[in-house]
Length: 625
Image (cartoon, rainbow, N blue to C red; front, side, top):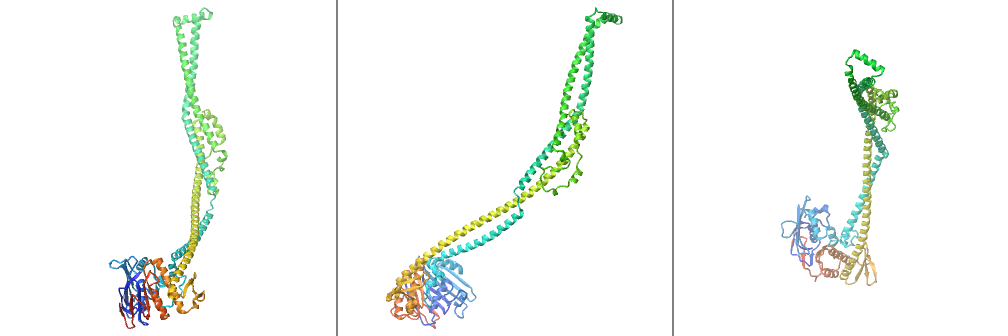
């Protein structure tokens, strides 16, 4: 950047300062006696650009306001390599109110407003900030010393500042992730403690579920058996009157069938006896007797045959009737006899030891103390038919000879007792379901904790990988910074090597610049490198001026990449006239990029050509050039 004009009011010594039409190239000489305001011009340039000066810290910036005034302002116009001109304006009052504006010359709308906004926008335009400016383009009125090798400005010039920032961020991120790992490990220990308190037994839930399934199956079987028994009992009771009626009808039919058989036999035998053997003694006597009492008996003799035939037909009909009733009775007996099978099946599902109140070994469930006491349950139980009762009635049930009342009484007691046992099992099943729900909830909670722990472990592993990556990146950055620093030192030596002979009239040509920027100079007279304290103070300052010019040139090449101004405040304070003249002759020639050089001094040797000169005076409070 090249300064085109500077305008200020109430800054340091000057109530009004106007520097216009500044040349783009060449020396700008600012001269005058002590306390004439020469350095105030450089300070005004510094304040206009960055809102602070070299001699005043940020907390004391209000001291830049001229004594007795309450506010100050500055406007600086500069030109960049692309030919565009910008203006930066600042305002400051004694209350600490600080305003700033950056805009293109001629535009009403600013590019940025406010101190921070202008600072960021200006950095994007010119490529450097206050610290780099002070270490390179602005040599304040002070001793010219070796720049600090670890200063931020030098790192920016060398190009390692972004890498150092990145390395620092990597290190900071690694420390943060180490802290996060510690926090995650603490969380894991808490999760593990909770898991230990839960104490999940992996075999408990399967056992409970198996016991539940067994219990449910038994209940289903018993319910089915009770329903089958009740159905069989209802069938028996329904069949009982039918069976009694069928048996009675079959007895009557059998008796009538027997009588008809006798009648048919008697009638048929009489007809055969009378009609087929009349000549024998007995038929003759019987015929004589019938003739005496029934003169027309011979005419009615065929009726005996008809009577025999009719009785025979009726006999056959009642025979069929008896056979039909017998089949019906057999069917009813078979249906009723199923009750005995159902009763046997049900009692087989509930053996005698279970009836005595002992626990089924397959019942499972919670601890015994969670169940009702056996005595209380026994008091509520219905009396179950004994084995003797069942054994005594079962054959009669098979024969369908037991009465409906007997069956109803026995089956009712059996069903009532069985339903009590089913209710007990259902209660046990309910307890198992509750135990399973509790265990499932515990398992779910443990599963959630396990997933939480796994998540923490994955996060720890991910953070460890990130730490490893950042360590590797830091090592690579360290290597890159070393390489860049070495290259920077080589470039700096080359630039100083080109400038130093011009400033020392070829007495000194070669420098050694270490990694810590310590400088040693090669003396052609001694044929060896010497430390700076071995040479005169004037030569030391010439050498250090060459180093500062080299730093300025390096910053131009790295960041500005265009023409640049340079402010030298009293650089030749300890130079003799000849050294000052030769140095001023060198300044416009040592670099193509550093085109505009502001030189501040009390007086300059005769014969030095300046593109513009500014003369300051102790009693001059307004400077318009």
